[in-house]
View (cartoon, rainbow, N blue to C red):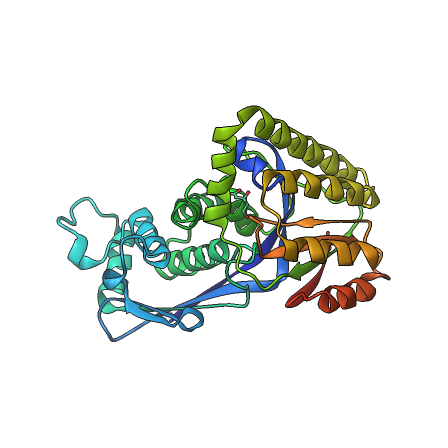
Length: 330
Ligand code: MEV
């Protein structure tokens, strides 16, 4: 028997970094890229993880305690009450389905993980891998996690990736829909009244989210007044952007993106490479552009009309983009 699950990539439209400090942010899934997990029974004892993209092939209990893939598996086992046999001291009080699931695990499992989402690029590869594994593994154990549980587990794993995550990445990847997000509040799906086109340009430079989040925190500790003012502006931009999207005026997002980019630059998370792609897309006709995600590398986004998209794509490659994705938000 084999169980499979897939999870999309994501981009943040507005409010990255400020969202960590309680401001609202907007994010959308990127279905052109995805992470996939396949769980199958195996004759070999233990839970084997095979992730060729990161050259990992190991038995779960041999993974380091802070390994994100290992943590996902442990959390799913704990959630479903199906800890591998060696970690169980007493099996009393188990339900029939937990017993069944443990029988599956004690025979051995193989989890194959693949992903077309570039690592450390701001496209949510870590969250997507977690969500795909949680869904495939819990389904294989006969106890599929609902979205809320998937999101909760993926958030725990994000803490390993990022330190102090807001939870926006795991949420948009779990629900696979455009969202308006405020840390710690119930998620709100965005009602996209009129579809619009976003172009995503990759600098090819890894975006060290953990470090850029820590860098922003340091600046905040040094000058809380200034940083909180910047966070507030980013939050207001996200609010106005939400209204523009829900009222059918996506063309208004360009000016808001430019303003968000200015604020992110002041927060210290842009980079010469990101600035170059932002400039190139604007010169090629994008009405707005900004970095997306942690910054200092990774991806930027530009707002485009459908007709002008090829011109912007070409300009981004000419300015050094390593990869470009055109995605429709709907
Ligand atoms: C990372 O995709 C987005 C950040 O705002 C961090 C977070 O929200 O956890 C930079």
